[in-house]
Length: 277
Image (cartoon, rainbow, N blue to C red; front, side):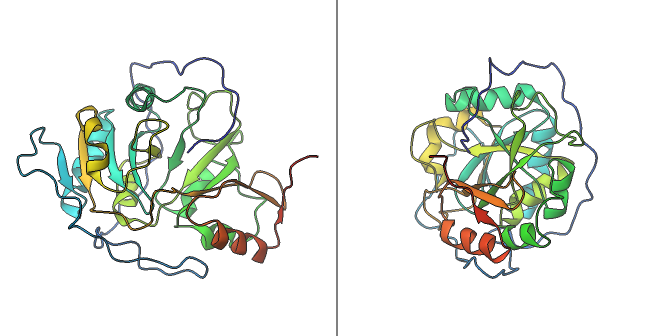
């Protein structure tokens, strides 16, 4: 996710990670499908293609794993060790790490060649987790549950009560939050007992990845690459919407679900924040 901001300097490297408050683990469903809970507004494309993005049988680096229940714990252990992994979401493939491991966060910036002035979003397991990291009290009842899980990044104020490390995106008072409609990454977020830093799995400025072969040149920088096949949503990524102001919304990036997102926002009586003339 890229949201305009002013952040001075690079993120400092830390020698240790700071754990977040634990989140209970949960039972697993099929990980090669999106969440089966349908919501009004977001039509779901349930089929994943595993045929058009085959990986070399040799898998020379030994990094590729299927995005299935059997390997979720392996992903969690890598995150707790401060490593970066590549995962499928409900839109595109992403690089993920523990949001409280600044060494891992810095590694993501280095892998992508990303400017340190471009903040990272976080991914949490459930809508109910968002209030631990951002201010939600001003939002209409039911809004977040209507938008998420889904292909939307909601930008919210971090607030003083946020348990998110202030060293993530320093100088920025807001944070982009995702709850992807993808059981595998949500399972990883639960197991990691905190928030994941999440961004697209590509070099900055290059097309997003809908298949692990799209970013094969970057595999060597990951602890694991989890293969969920060819993702059906295209390369647009999530729709980014700023919800920091009471009663207002602002689309920061159209992404793959702008029309449905706007319909939900307007249904909850939010008005579009227009650019100052």
